[in-house]
Length: 230
Image (tube, rainbow, N blue to C red; front, side, top):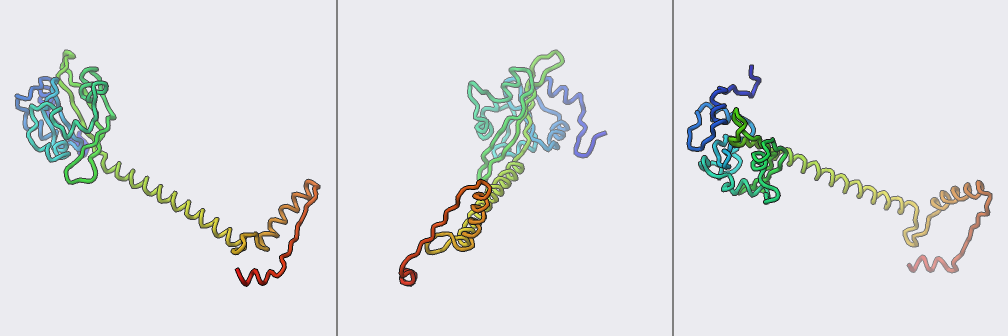
């Protein structure tokens, strides 16, 4: 029994489509419809890397994806392949999947979209398609859109940066308040309250260590004049 969101597709149709991939052959409409109901983007390639099928979710990734892609080499879809930054040393994931006959997953992809400040971000997985004799027929490529997740992560990072800045500002203000509470604003010297607080600590330390404690008292002549002038 299918759960909510699942679609039952005739297994024989899927077997024929995936086993005998040929862009020139028509894919049953019910198979296309089944793929179009999937929430993830799906693209099927033949072993030459040509597009056999692209579902509705995938076609909504980019305006150019609405053009007929059937039979086109996937490398001609510049809006897609440019997001992989592939090289001879690091080929496209579907190439690696077909060469190794094994799944390739967790590939990251960014698709720049016209008129959008934010690119579409996706996690890409590739699975080779083999027939009953183990012969390669193509590759199934799925795209999980994680744009919203990245946006939330970026917002969280921004919030953390703001909180750290607020924390630093609070620390700075506390230091300033402490300075204003313990220092004479004109001379910067410790005020009377700070002096006695400091003196208690030094007296206790001197008592514990049985060491002498010295106090120097100085006086400035005509200090009223200095105070009135400055």
